[in-house]
Amino acid sequence: MTNDYIKTGSPIYARSFEIIREESNLGRFPEDVEPVVVRMIHAAADPAIADLIAFTPGVVAAALKALEAGAPILCDSSMVATGIIRSRLPEHTRIVCHIKDPRLPAIAEAKGCTKTAAAVDLWQEDGLLDGAVVAIGNAPTALFRVLEVMHETGARPAAIVGIPVGFVGAAESKDALVADDSGVEYITVLGRRGGSAMAVAAVNAMASRAETTNDR
Image (tube, rainbow, N blue to C red; front, side, top):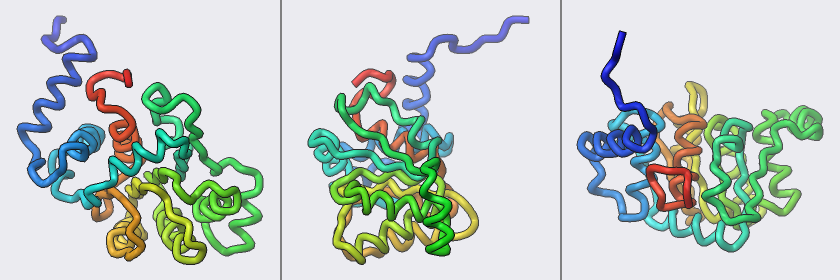
């Protein structure tokens, strides 16, 4: 049996992005945000994602400036941390995920919160949150807690990729991000949809203009 299909990676990527641009409403996105949205749509395999994306116009520039200045990327899950392409990042960029930190269970129990929310407190205690790029693809409680810690402490991430997924709290946490009055730069997908793949796609696209390869 012989099937007719594209067999190599680069043409597959190129055609995928052509289809995305043909089928998606991308006109409202600034020049530097549009490739990020395309990557997010690619991760979701759904052009309708474009209509659900909320963002601040300066989010990509802020994230890139922070990374070039040595800011860490703070991730809510191992899936997000693992998916970020290190070759796209400045050489010494730290990718931080505390979800396996042995301190977390006790902190979460004491605070009466999830481990992902407790991890946000560790980011702040370790002096990492202010000026960081935050990437949340799973846990609404982590996004809620980031916003709370921002107002409790005055710490401000340089940019938030806030795309938690789920039926409980996901839509509400993203609405809270959009409504926040702190001026933080962000990109999100409104509603229940989200996930690690979209969060990773956004970070990778922000870090490099290379669209169809893993090169910087």
